[in-house]
Length: 187
Length: 187
Image (spheres, rainbow over the protein chains, first blue to last red):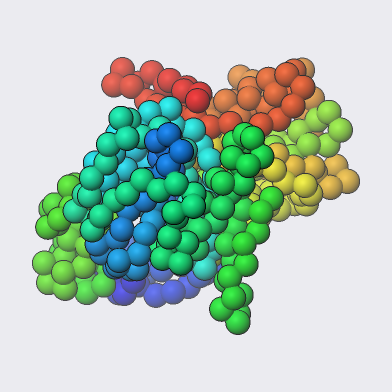
């Protein structure tokens, strides 16, 4: 951020009075421009013993497989966001949506919120951001071609719940250390 | 938003190619400025049979009571955000934090994520954004002086869980209808 989005003057990074961290502040119109994490809403959509994966047609991680997920939009609920992403990326209609996981990824300032849902009639097809979509049984999940660590973690939690005989709401963090190593924390 | 924060030229509200909703777009440097919901992280901090409430020293709802909560900051986890808010607003140290509720409020583009935690040593005092803090038993909660509907709903869920003999992760929405009526949805 270089310019004030309200008045167009240059901003500077400074700690506002009464605050405890630097913000982009406009000296001209006195607007403080806060920047905050984004929510990513997604879904594990089930049909019989298989789940829906999408092959990414866009970067980052073009050609890799992922769960339908994307940035929550203003004026929608997290559940609506997850359903919208399933429709946009896989033309997938969902039923019986249940919150499944909440995972903070602080180094990219994102909070992933995944639902679990039924894929209506098992029907899905590639939307504009997907090269392909598919229904995968656990044994066929392309673990080495999954786009993002948070998707790997979500799928692990899902299959662990199945083995344990029931679903619950999971929460945790994926933290990047100074040596670039990712640590998955579960609570 | 009137001006591009990257280059300072005027922006216009237009649907970018490949998108399906209006965004602020800069015709000069071609930056698309996305605006997305904020996460509010907060906590129900317990000490014996009482919970911590804060009397707001700032607007909105100055003088009303609330749970410690505030906007999640970049590069922090939701749990860290909730702990930070408890410290900032009530000098409260927390232990044993557990995710309690996730409530979307689409008309203000916010997602509230409340934890439940132990208030260490039962110690709390007013931070700069609080006029007062207090530990309240259920019978003494000032229900008519609670700052926000999402706080009322969080407290209701909490006392319902206590009556039901156990806590779980709740999720739902608070939706504002055209006639201004608020509807609480639980899933």
